[in-house]
Amino acid sequence: MCSGYYNYARGHSPEWPGMEDFGGRIVHPQFWPADLDYSGKKVVVIGSGATAVTLVPAMAESAAHVTMLQRSPTYVVSRPAEDATANWLRAKLPAKLAYSLVRWRNVLFQMFFFNLARKRPEKTKERLIEMVRGELGADYDVATHFTPRYNPWDQRLCLVPDADLFAVIKSGKASVVTDTIAHFTHDGIALQSGAELPADVVVTATGLELQLLSDVTFSVDGAPVDLSKTFNYKGMMFSDVPNMATSFGYTNASWTLKADLTCAYVCRLLNTMKKRGLRQATPRVGDAALTPAPFLDFSSGYVTRAMEKFPKQGSKTPWRVHQNYARDLLALRYGSVDDGMEFSNPATPEATRAAQSRITA
Image (cartoon, one colour):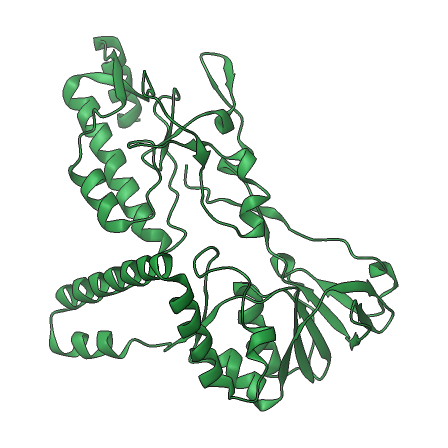
Protein backbone atom coordinates (compact mmCIF):
# COMPACT_ATOMS: atom_id res chain seq x y z
CA MET A 1 0.00 0.00 0.00
CA CYS A 2 1.48 3.33 -1.11
CA SER A 3 -1.50 5.55 -0.33
CA GLY A 4 0.20 7.98 2.03
CA TYR A 5 -1.65 9.05 5.15
CA TYR A 6 -3.83 11.96 4.05
CA ASN A 7 -7.49 11.93 3.11
CA TYR A 8 -7.29 13.80 -0.18
CA ALA A 9 -11.08 13.84 -0.59
CA ARG A 10 -11.44 16.35 2.23
CA GLY A 11 -9.38 18.70 4.35
CA HIS A 12 -9.66 19.64 7.99
CA SER A 13 -12.11 22.55 7.93
CA PRO A 14 -13.19 23.99 11.28
CA GLU A 15 -16.51 25.81 11.38
CA TRP A 16 -16.55 29.34 12.79
CA PRO A 17 -19.64 31.39 13.64
CA GLY A 18 -20.77 33.76 10.92
CA MET A 19 -18.99 32.09 8.00
CA GLU A 20 -22.22 32.22 6.01
CA ASP A 21 -22.31 36.02 6.50
CA PHE A 22 -18.89 36.61 4.95
CA GLY A 23 -19.14 38.62 1.73
CA GLY A 24 -15.93 37.36 0.14
CA ARG A 25 -14.64 33.90 -0.79
CA ILE A 26 -13.50 31.17 1.61
CA VAL A 27 -11.06 28.70 0.09
CA HIS A 28 -9.41 25.52 1.41
CA PRO A 29 -6.02 24.91 -0.24
CA GLN A 30 -6.91 21.26 -0.88
CA PHE A 31 -9.60 22.42 -3.30
CA TRP A 32 -8.09 25.54 -4.84
CA PRO A 33 -10.55 27.03 -7.37
CA ALA A 34 -9.11 27.71 -10.81
CA ASP A 35 -11.01 30.98 -11.08
CA LEU A 36 -9.73 32.52 -7.83
CA ASP A 37 -8.36 36.00 -8.52
CA TYR A 38 -6.86 37.66 -5.46
CA SER A 39 -4.93 40.39 -7.31
CA GLY A 40 -5.19 43.67 -5.43
CA LYS A 41 -7.33 42.09 -2.73
CA LYS A 42 -6.99 41.73 1.02
CA VAL A 43 -6.24 38.10 1.91
CA VAL A 44 -6.28 36.36 5.29
CA VAL A 45 -4.57 32.96 5.50
CA ILE A 46 -5.69 31.05 8.60
CA GLY A 47 -2.95 28.74 9.85
CA SER A 48 0.74 28.61 10.69
CA GLY A 49 1.92 25.35 9.16
CA ALA A 50 3.75 24.46 5.98
CA THR A 51 0.83 25.36 3.71
CA ALA A 52 0.36 28.77 5.30
CA VAL A 53 4.04 29.79 5.21
CA THR A 54 4.18 28.71 1.56
CA LEU A 55 1.01 30.54 0.49
CA VAL A 56 1.71 33.87 2.21
CA PRO A 57 4.81 34.91 0.20
CA ALA A 58 3.35 33.51 -3.04
CA MET A 59 0.04 35.39 -2.68
CA ALA A 60 1.75 38.57 -1.47
CA GLU A 61 3.25 39.01 -4.95
CA SER A 62 -0.10 40.24 -6.33
CA ALA A 63 -2.47 40.68 -3.37
CA ALA A 64 -2.99 44.09 -1.80
CA HIS A 65 -1.98 42.59 1.54
CA VAL A 66 -1.79 39.11 3.07
CA THR A 67 -2.31 38.45 6.77
CA MET A 68 -1.30 35.13 8.30
CA LEU A 69 -3.73 34.61 11.18
CA GLN A 70 -2.49 31.99 13.62
CA ARG A 71 -3.84 30.72 16.91
CA SER A 72 -0.29 29.88 18.02
CA PRO A 73 3.17 30.15 16.41
CA THR A 74 5.23 27.49 14.66
CA TYR A 75 9.01 27.16 14.43
CA VAL A 76 10.01 28.66 11.08
CA VAL A 77 13.52 28.17 9.69
CA SER A 78 15.04 29.69 6.57
CA ARG A 79 17.33 27.66 4.34
CA PRO A 80 18.80 28.45 0.90
CA ALA A 81 16.59 27.33 -1.98
CA GLU A 82 19.69 25.91 -3.68
CA ASP A 83 22.39 23.86 -1.96
CA ALA A 84 25.67 25.62 -2.76
CA THR A 85 27.77 22.67 -1.53
CA ALA A 86 25.81 20.24 -3.69
CA ASN A 87 26.22 22.46 -6.75
CA TRP A 88 29.97 22.73 -6.12
CA LEU A 89 30.38 18.97 -5.67
CA ARG A 90 28.43 18.23 -8.86
CA ALA A 91 30.82 20.47 -10.77
CA LYS A 92 33.88 18.69 -9.36
CA LEU A 93 32.88 15.04 -8.96
CA PRO A 94 31.01 12.34 -10.90
CA ALA A 95 27.27 12.84 -10.49
CA LYS A 96 26.61 9.61 -8.57
CA LEU A 97 29.41 10.24 -6.08
CA ALA A 98 28.37 13.86 -5.57
CA TYR A 99 24.77 12.78 -4.99
CA SER A 100 25.81 10.15 -2.45
CA LEU A 101 27.99 12.57 -0.50
CA VAL A 102 25.30 15.26 -0.37
CA ARG A 103 22.63 12.74 0.58
CA TRP A 104 24.62 11.40 3.51
CA ARG A 105 25.61 14.88 4.62
CA ASN A 106 21.94 15.89 4.73
CA VAL A 107 20.90 12.69 6.49
CA LEU A 108 23.60 13.01 9.16
CA PHE A 109 22.92 16.71 9.69
CA GLN A 110 19.21 16.06 10.15
CA MET A 111 19.90 13.26 12.65
CA PHE A 112 22.34 15.48 14.56
CA PHE A 113 19.91 18.40 14.68
CA PHE A 114 16.96 16.21 15.72
CA ASN A 115 18.92 14.54 18.53
CA LEU A 116 20.29 17.90 19.68
CA ALA A 117 16.77 19.33 19.79
CA ARG A 118 15.58 16.39 21.88
CA LYS A 119 18.51 16.48 24.31
CA ARG A 120 18.76 20.26 24.65
CA PRO A 121 15.32 21.64 23.73
CA GLU A 122 15.72 25.01 25.45
CA LYS A 123 19.04 25.78 23.77
CA THR A 124 17.70 24.66 20.40
CA LYS A 125 14.58 26.77 20.85
CA GLU A 126 16.69 29.78 21.80
CA ARG A 127 18.83 29.37 18.67
CA LEU A 128 15.82 29.00 16.36
CA ILE A 129 14.22 32.15 17.79
CA GLU A 130 17.51 34.04 17.43
CA MET A 131 17.59 33.13 13.74
CA VAL A 132 14.09 34.53 13.23
CA ARG A 133 15.00 37.70 15.11
CA GLY A 134 18.05 38.05 12.86
CA GLU A 135 15.74 37.96 9.83
CA LEU A 136 13.03 40.32 11.12
CA GLY A 137 15.06 42.68 13.31
CA ALA A 138 15.13 43.54 16.99
CA ASP A 139 11.96 45.66 16.82
CA TYR A 140 9.71 42.85 15.55
CA ASP A 141 7.56 41.06 18.15
CA VAL A 142 9.15 37.63 17.70
CA ALA A 143 8.05 36.57 21.19
CA THR A 144 4.38 36.80 20.19
CA HIS A 145 4.43 35.65 16.58
CA PHE A 146 7.36 33.21 16.22
CA THR A 147 7.89 31.66 19.67
CA PRO A 148 5.94 28.40 19.96
CA ARG A 149 4.64 27.00 23.24
CA TYR A 150 6.12 23.55 22.51
CA ASN A 151 9.67 22.25 22.08
CA PRO A 152 11.35 21.81 18.69
CA TRP A 153 10.30 18.59 16.93
CA ASP A 154 7.27 18.03 19.17
CA GLN A 155 5.77 19.14 15.85
CA ARG A 156 7.35 19.62 12.44
CA LEU A 157 9.50 22.66 11.75
CA CYS A 158 8.48 24.83 8.79
CA LEU A 159 11.16 25.53 6.20
CA VAL A 160 10.99 28.72 4.14
CA PRO A 161 13.35 28.95 1.13
CA ASP A 162 15.62 32.00 1.00
CA ALA A 163 13.67 33.59 3.88
CA ASP A 164 10.80 34.46 1.50
CA LEU A 165 8.22 34.64 4.30
CA PHE A 166 10.39 36.99 6.34
CA ALA A 167 11.09 39.11 3.26
CA VAL A 168 7.40 39.83 2.56
CA ILE A 169 6.81 40.61 6.23
CA LYS A 170 9.67 43.12 6.24
CA SER A 171 8.42 44.66 3.00
CA GLY A 172 4.97 45.29 4.49
CA LYS A 173 3.24 43.12 1.89
CA ALA A 174 2.33 40.60 4.59
CA SER A 175 1.85 40.52 8.33
CA VAL A 176 1.29 37.99 11.10
CA VAL A 177 -1.51 38.21 13.65
CA THR A 178 -1.58 35.83 16.62
CA ASP A 179 -5.12 35.66 17.99
CA THR A 180 -8.22 33.49 18.01
CA ILE A 181 -11.30 33.88 15.85
CA ALA A 182 -14.49 35.12 17.50
CA HIS A 183 -16.63 35.07 14.36
CA PHE A 184 -16.73 36.04 10.71
CA THR A 185 -18.31 39.31 9.64
CA HIS A 186 -19.47 40.49 6.22
CA ASP A 187 -16.16 42.25 5.66
CA GLY A 188 -13.67 39.99 7.42
CA ILE A 189 -12.89 38.24 10.69
CA ALA A 190 -13.57 39.49 14.21
CA LEU A 191 -10.97 38.37 16.75
CA GLN A 192 -11.26 37.58 20.45
CA SER A 193 -9.02 40.57 21.19
CA GLY A 194 -11.69 42.87 19.75
CA ALA A 195 -9.76 43.63 16.55
CA GLU A 196 -11.16 42.90 13.10
CA LEU A 197 -9.21 41.76 10.06
CA PRO A 198 -10.66 43.04 6.76
CA ALA A 199 -10.65 40.42 4.03
CA ASP A 200 -11.85 39.83 0.49
CA VAL A 201 -10.48 36.28 0.43
CA VAL A 202 -9.97 33.89 3.37
CA VAL A 203 -7.79 30.82 2.88
CA THR A 204 -8.28 28.15 5.55
CA ALA A 205 -4.83 26.54 5.66
CA THR A 206 -6.00 24.51 8.63
CA GLY A 207 -4.53 21.18 7.61
CA LEU A 208 -5.61 17.82 6.31
CA GLU A 209 -7.19 14.75 7.82
CA LEU A 210 -5.13 11.61 8.32
CA GLN A 211 -6.36 8.36 6.86
CA LEU A 212 -4.97 4.84 7.27
CA LEU A 213 -4.48 2.99 3.98
CA SER A 214 -7.19 5.01 2.21
CA ASP A 215 -9.79 3.56 4.62
CA VAL A 216 -9.75 0.28 2.72
CA THR A 217 -11.54 -2.52 4.58
CA PHE A 218 -9.39 -5.61 5.08
CA SER A 219 -10.22 -9.17 6.11
CA VAL A 220 -8.19 -12.33 6.68
CA ASP A 221 -9.94 -15.61 5.83
CA GLY A 222 -13.25 -13.76 5.83
CA ALA A 223 -12.77 -12.22 9.29
CA PRO A 224 -12.67 -8.38 9.35
CA VAL A 225 -9.41 -6.86 10.55
CA ASP A 226 -9.30 -3.73 12.69
CA LEU A 227 -5.81 -2.41 11.96
CA SER A 228 -6.00 0.01 14.90
CA LYS A 229 -5.91 -3.04 17.20
CA THR A 230 -2.72 -4.39 15.63
CA PHE A 231 0.94 -3.72 16.37
CA ASN A 232 3.03 -2.19 13.61
CA TYR A 233 5.94 -4.36 12.49
CA LYS A 234 9.19 -2.59 11.50
CA GLY A 235 7.23 0.50 10.53
CA MET A 236 5.58 -1.24 7.56
CA MET A 237 3.51 -4.37 8.39
CA PHE A 238 0.74 -5.31 10.82
CA SER A 239 0.61 -8.08 13.41
CA ASP A 240 -1.37 -11.16 12.29
CA VAL A 241 -2.00 -9.69 8.82
CA PRO A 242 -0.17 -11.73 6.17
CA ASN A 243 1.55 -10.47 3.04
CA MET A 244 0.71 -6.80 3.43
CA ALA A 245 3.03 -3.85 3.88
CA THR A 246 2.61 -0.09 3.67
CA SER A 247 5.09 2.60 2.72
CA PHE A 248 5.15 5.14 5.57
CA GLY A 249 7.97 7.65 5.81
CA TYR A 250 9.61 9.68 8.58
CA THR A 251 8.07 12.58 10.43
CA ASN A 252 11.46 14.15 11.18
CA ALA A 253 13.24 13.62 7.85
CA SER A 254 12.63 13.04 4.18
CA TRP A 255 9.66 10.75 3.59
CA THR A 256 11.44 8.92 0.79
CA LEU A 257 14.29 7.74 3.03
CA LYS A 258 11.98 5.30 4.83
CA ALA A 259 10.01 4.58 1.65
CA ASP A 260 13.22 3.37 -0.03
CA LEU A 261 14.09 1.13 2.93
CA THR A 262 10.55 -0.27 3.01
CA CYS A 263 10.60 -1.18 -0.69
CA ALA A 264 13.97 -2.91 -0.35
CA TYR A 265 12.79 -4.84 2.70
CA VAL A 266 9.63 -6.03 0.98
CA CYS A 267 11.84 -7.32 -1.84
CA ARG A 268 13.94 -9.19 0.75
CA LEU A 269 10.77 -10.82 2.09
CA LEU A 270 9.58 -11.80 -1.38
CA ASN A 271 12.97 -13.29 -2.26
CA THR A 272 13.08 -15.18 1.05
CA MET A 273 9.62 -16.62 0.44
CA LYS A 274 10.57 -17.66 -3.08
CA LYS A 275 13.82 -19.27 -1.91
CA ARG A 276 12.03 -21.24 0.83
CA GLY A 277 9.10 -22.20 -1.35
CA LEU A 278 6.63 -20.43 0.94
CA ARG A 279 3.87 -18.01 0.03
CA GLN A 280 2.95 -16.33 3.30
CA ALA A 281 4.77 -13.98 5.69
CA THR A 282 2.86 -12.96 8.83
CA PRO A 283 4.23 -10.80 11.66
CA ARG A 284 3.43 -12.45 15.01
CA VAL A 285 3.74 -10.88 18.44
CA GLY A 286 3.87 -14.34 20.01
CA ASP A 287 4.75 -14.25 23.69
CA ALA A 288 6.52 -10.89 23.47
CA ALA A 289 5.42 -8.65 26.32
CA LEU A 290 4.69 -5.38 24.53
CA THR A 291 3.61 -2.11 26.05
CA PRO A 292 1.49 -0.30 23.44
CA ALA A 293 2.26 3.28 22.47
CA PRO A 294 0.87 5.63 19.78
CA PHE A 295 2.15 4.94 16.27
CA LEU A 296 3.50 8.52 16.03
CA ASP A 297 4.98 10.49 18.91
CA PHE A 298 3.87 13.88 17.64
CA SER A 299 1.76 16.61 19.21
CA SER A 300 0.49 18.22 15.98
CA GLY A 301 -3.29 18.55 15.92
CA TYR A 302 -3.72 16.65 12.66
CA VAL A 303 -1.82 13.71 14.21
CA THR A 304 -3.50 13.62 17.62
CA ARG A 305 -6.95 13.86 15.99
CA ALA A 306 -6.40 10.62 14.09
CA MET A 307 -4.12 8.34 16.14
CA GLU A 308 -6.98 6.11 17.26
CA LYS A 309 -7.27 4.96 13.62
CA PHE A 310 -3.66 3.84 13.43
CA PRO A 311 -1.92 0.69 14.71
CA LYS A 312 0.08 0.79 17.91
CA GLN A 313 3.81 0.53 18.20
CA GLY A 314 5.37 -1.73 20.79
CA SER A 315 7.97 -1.15 23.47
CA LYS A 316 10.68 -3.27 21.82
CA THR A 317 11.93 -4.20 18.36
CA PRO A 318 10.74 -5.19 15.81
CA TRP A 319 7.56 -3.44 16.96
CA ARG A 320 9.12 -0.05 17.64
CA VAL A 321 8.82 2.73 15.06
CA HIS A 322 12.24 4.31 14.94
CA GLN A 323 12.45 7.81 13.47
CA ASN A 324 16.10 7.17 12.69
CA TYR A 325 17.41 6.43 9.20
CA ALA A 326 20.78 5.00 10.24
CA ARG A 327 19.16 2.60 12.71
CA ASP A 328 16.53 1.53 10.20
CA LEU A 329 19.16 1.12 7.49
CA LEU A 330 21.02 -1.45 9.59
CA ALA A 331 17.85 -3.21 10.74
CA LEU A 332 16.02 -3.37 7.41
CA ARG A 333 18.91 -3.91 5.05
CA TYR A 334 20.98 -6.28 7.17
CA GLY A 335 18.74 -7.48 10.03
CA SER A 336 17.09 -10.91 10.13
CA VAL A 337 13.85 -11.33 8.20
CA ASP A 338 12.84 -14.07 10.66
CA ASP A 339 12.64 -11.77 13.66
CA GLY A 340 8.97 -11.80 14.69
CA MET A 341 7.95 -13.23 11.32
CA GLU A 342 6.10 -16.48 10.62
CA PHE A 343 6.62 -17.97 7.15
CA SER A 344 4.05 -20.51 6.00
CA ASN A 345 1.81 -21.80 3.17
CA PRO A 346 4.12 -23.93 0.99
CA ALA A 347 3.92 -23.35 -2.72
CA THR A 348 2.24 -26.35 -4.40
CA PRO A 349 3.03 -27.34 -7.99
CA GLU A 350 -0.47 -26.23 -8.96
CA ALA A 351 -0.01 -22.83 -7.33
CA THR A 352 3.38 -22.41 -8.98
CA ARG A 353 1.94 -23.18 -12.42
CA ALA A 354 -0.97 -20.81 -11.82
CA ALA A 355 1.42 -18.02 -10.78
CA GLN A 356 3.58 -18.59 -13.84
CA SER A 357 0.53 -18.50 -16.12
CA ARG A 358 -0.55 -15.18 -14.60
CA ILE A 359 2.92 -13.73 -15.16
CA THR A 360 2.91 -14.98 -18.78
CA ALA A 361 -0.56 -13.50 -19.36
